Length: 116
Length: 111
Image 1 (cartoon, rainbow over the protein chains, first blue to last red):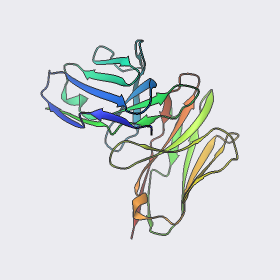
Image 2: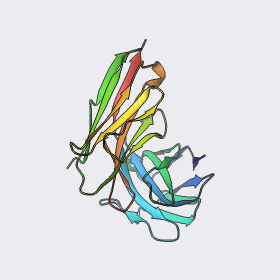
Image 3: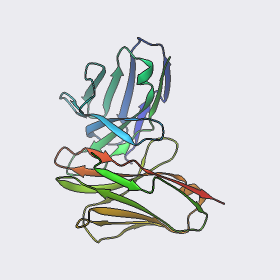
Image 4: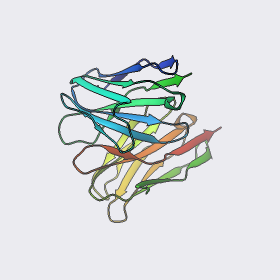
């Protein structure tokens, strides 16, 4: 149980285009989903927290107009990187948390974004 | 400021050795501490600790939390090459349910 998928696993796009990444909880309902970014040999940096049906909460320094998050259902959250630039190239990972009082998060396999 | 600090940053051991990974934290409203293992892709959950002094075990891995001294350790006995990975410590604080991750410890187990 507690499987989270991400799609695509790898994407290459041109500078100026937008890219959408999907995060799905496959066998549980995720009241909260998190989006992280990870640079090479660095730890996970939380970008935003999204709750189903409400606006995402962005961490300090993360541009909400650049990284659009939509949590349309209890099993799906999307991250859209708008007008991507080479510095947006990174490993993006989502995680999902089931309801109730728990900090346990289940991670998706990640999406490697390369902006050329 | 660093809220979650892991040490060592990297470690190379021989198969069969025992290793201890450290995680210290400084947060205002601690709720839980979690350990994850990250190989090539996303982290996989190992342990969640909320109470001091209670050891959690899973096979050759074990972990314990000290809420007075604000740290946790992750022990791996009889290491195998498959244990090679980055081990991440994360702390949950407040009511937002979000986690703050440490820098990770990169463990390499050689033959």
